[in-house]
Image 1 (cartoon, rainbow, N blue to C red):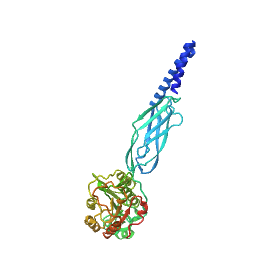
Image 2 (cartoon, one colour; image 1 turned 120 degrees about the vertical axis):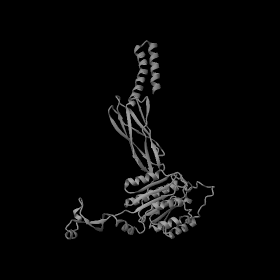
Image 3 (cartoon, rainbow, N blue to C red; image 1 turned 135 degrees about the horizontal axis):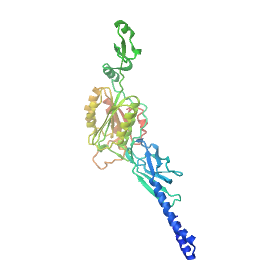
Image 4 (cartoon, rainbow, N blue to C red; image 1 turned 30 degrees about the vertical axis):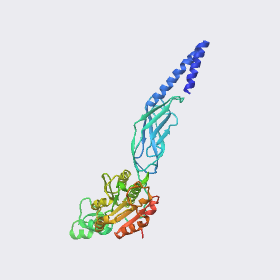
Length: 414
């Protein structure tokens, strides 16, 4: 189109000069000036545009979301054919754009949006920058301006529902009895009586004791303590198998996140332990924000550690309180149970319920093919699970491609 106007300008100018027509000559000279005005208009109108993205800090794998961008015109000129381009890196097709229909007048603001999906694997991603693009009213000149607007977004593991899982520790009620005998609370179990203190609820006045003593006496109740769940993950580099989103560690992260959600939804206190290049330890806690803290840590885990899982288990023993539950997620079925006997014996003595989740690494792409790494024949896997059961361990087996919600419907039964 610009070439058409320039050609028309040259023809009008030459025709005017040859024919001696001043009006045609003036038209030929005015057309280039008109193009310069349009170009300046497009450039100047874009300089007054600002944009701000609104995106959630967390999303899960495969989640679809709508990213909103607020656009404001602080300049003196209207903006035509305004388009906002963004780089949404959690999506394999990361180049996104949203077009503003109509004119953005000076002083006006509006919101555009584009759909996106978190199709890449878990991890932390930088979204942005934003690029603004507009043109003049005739669409002859287009200008771009990049806004250094970026946001960090964490893609957490994709979770699955767990309908039933024995997360209450062994001797839980005995343990609660021993622990709550030292502390009063608000449960329905009667604890004792004491003298009235300012602020006590008068509904709990114990009238017989009040009558006998001549003082206000109130009832106390035991404190309800939630069960505790410790999640232990294997981050040893040699246990990693698979590629892309289908790795043993990605399955472990999804399992750990789903168990954490299941436990926290039932008022349990959950902690996460993983030995990578550095120790990852999310202390005991509960509630939705604590769950997001755990999922955020799971999103960023990598198989970069050098601590074997048997050593990590021994180091985790002091963190598992009596009467709690320890969930160990093994990235391999290649287990030498002799290395775990000491730790398992101590944990059983403390009344800790032990749950082992074995991920069958034989079903994943072998990244270590050609090394001396031992493989376990699939026919021996049930025997390994039986040996775990003889140690008082509740066991589950997960394979690549399994519906994990079905895997956790019931533990392994020989």
